[in-house]
Length: 560
Image (cartoon, rainbow, N blue to C red; front, side):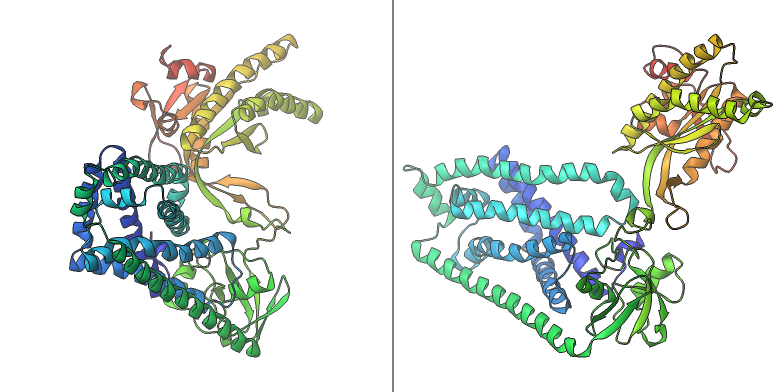
């Protein structure tokens, strides 16, 4: 969790102000969506929100967060030494600059109209006033722009957490529902309130109750809106003048940086090494967007480290968290003023095996560990050709059950294998593992019938199914690093498979797999197993034949 708050005070202020604005926006959009049910619910939620934000403290927090967030964004843009940036970051910047242009009209016709012209900007008045008008379409666009900007910002902040990646599909669904709910509420109440507001009979009285602006008032509001927009545009222009002015002045004092595994580049003093790389078109990993949290942009300074400024506390903390050596620095925080030679720890150009997939990814998935029983005794005295022939026939028989369920064989282990079910969710992964185990058992029966017809001994197997956190990545020497999985979950699955022999069963399915697949573990009699190298006892369902798994889990037959 500490990784979320790493950075200087400006980074932390931007995060805090963004979270305050996100909470306000979420509440406000929910209020608008309540218009699907009634105007009273729509207005009631908004009044509760206004009680929190229109007081001295609430107003200071809300408008302080708005000005802080916008001011820090312009400050960061002015300080950038290059406008080259990843598409996600560029989109976030453009959306952020668009928001004030669209938001100004809303603020002027609500807060300014209320404070200066005694207009009552209730939800019914606003919805009816802008219904089916250019302003209405503009506010609908504002809703989408604000929400997309907020969701991108939240994702960029939280994506360094493994837990966030696990819940991301659910959060994407919720993120889609919020603006849809708000727009639906506006459509319903906008049409109804517009009819009421301009009804020939009761409309005049309703407009009077709202303090409906006169033509002169609308003209004054439009003038104020233009003035505020002019101020904002002026701030953006000033920001860009400062940006390009700094670049022009800095260009005269270029700093040269040589990459051990790449080209020699130059940049202006004050630029971060990451910015220098982007300007020069040098691929450089930065999963957190250059915010100093993920450490994937780190470099090893092989020459010139003594001439560089020491790392600030946030950078030092990030490097300490990954046990980086003393000469390691973060490219997104390092601002070279003297020549240096550096080595990128991670590359993202795809020209060698050490691309982004080699960095490792943590996911919670189901795995299956399988081993053939008494293989050594069975093959003693056989020719190598016969041993290999048997194994290949065996794997040809059972592996389609794994791949057909959506799994992949991570590695073959002589007379066994390790399979992982890398699907979109824990539930899908667990269900696929159970399906594969049942399929393997059925396929083994057919294979053994073939062996029997050849007067050969049948094959017996043991399988351990477990689910937990795994690290997926390319492990090994450069250009010789296969993608594999590691972690305590792999050890636990292996130990479960080992217990199948002692229990005289074909499969052990851990409680974690059952629960993730949507089955109630308490509905079955589970074995409590002490596994070597596993800290806590593991509860598992034991079956003599894995082919009976679907029937047992649907309670059509008893556990055997």
